[in-house]
Amino acid sequence: MDFSSQGSIHEEVICRICHQLLTEPLSLNCGHNFCQACISANESESFFGGQCRCPVCQSPYDPWNLLPNQQLTDRVKKIREANMSSHQQQRRDLCEHHGENCHLFCKEDGKAICSFCVQEQHQGHQIYSVEEVVKECQEKFQVAVYRLTQEQQEAEKLEGVINEERDTWKNCMQTERERILKGFEEMRGILDREEKRELQKLDDNEVHVLDNLAVAKDQMAQQSQYMRELISDLQRHMCEASVDTLQDIINVIRRSEVWTLKKPKIVSKKLSTFRFPDLNGMLKAFKELAEAQSHWVDLTLNPFNDLSNVVVSEDHRQVTIGSDFMFRNVYPRNFFAFDVQSSQNFSSGKYYWEVDVSGKVAWILGVYSKTSNLNRNKSSGFVFTPKPNYSNAYSRFRPENGYWVVGLQNQSEYNAFEDSSTTDPNILTLFIAVPPHRVGIFLDQEASTVTFFNVTNHGSLIYKFSKCHFSQTVYPYFNPWNCPVPITLCPPSS
Image (cartoon, rainbow, N blue to C red; front, side):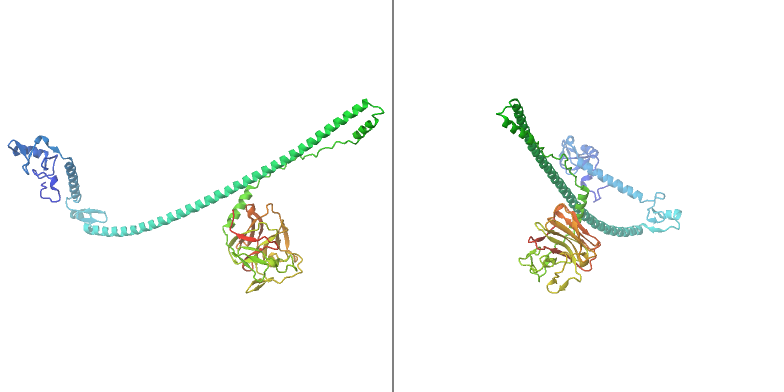
């Protein structure tokens, strides 16, 4: 095939002698390239004046110094492969049975056919031109590409959402992991402190017992020494009895008669056995407190302005009694004089707040829901009408009157106040091993419960009111009573 007229093929890959693709191309010094066979055959023809000359530019060259051109060899190889592929494609476009161009397409059989095939094998089939089928396929391609592009974009959006959700979950898991680690670290700290406390108690007991035994031992040693001396005197006077020593003998006898061995105080051999703490109970208390603290609300105090006997701090988070509180002389134990509620009130939901009562010898905390016992004044909050005939200082603190509270009086008496059949509430005495410096109050209006936690003792339960009937909105309630140490609202502590 003559390639000299094909502009699509570069001149560099065409031999200027045979005008075909180069075969084993060799390069001359002048830069022209020829087939090895062509330039070898041309040597005798181009030899002039004892030199071989280039057939193109007549430049002399040394036939023994011709170099193979590997770069051209590779290019020619690729061109030959492309030509072979093109030729094979042309062969495929021809009908294998009739050698005619396959310009038709049978949809039933899904194959390209020629005109003769239609008559022989495809009569009655849906026959279309290849151009129509190609156009239809291109349109379907466009629709498919558009649809898949939309779905790809949607997939990318979903992937972004999944990545965000994954990051959110990773952050949540890390936060929960840190919370768990912190909780168990606190638990280990508690156990370490308990261990040190119990060991210190044991050491102190050991010192006390050993000191007592040492004193008893010294006392017995002194008594033994005294008895040895007394026995020696008796024996000596027995041998030396005379009128002159009679008085001494009588004295020694009297001393021996009045002598009585003083036995030491017996130290109890019973050693108090340490009772290991209920770890399951501690974990449960931790979980319940942590769950309650997740509903913490930042409360502020709202003093009853008509009562000058309480003083609320500027940040409205601390309350204490005033220097001259109302009803002081008439009703020294009247709790009405110290009522304070929060500025916030609740009608549904879960809420937790925490109160610092460090150093107080009396207080009342809980929640209050308005009843007919209290009259509301629009401008100044609650106004109370004191009743001096109360048989008990806690007479009004019962759920029936809208109070769900616990309290401390006389520094160590903890009480909860339930309804009773009499005018006085049923006062429950609460046993609290560790006096609370911080009290957590958790109001769950859906469950109708009010729970009090001893935060100082790692969230142990103080008391829980169940089946509370809140008739109206609920107010957190605070009463510092007649103790000058303030009550302080504070954020949750571990």
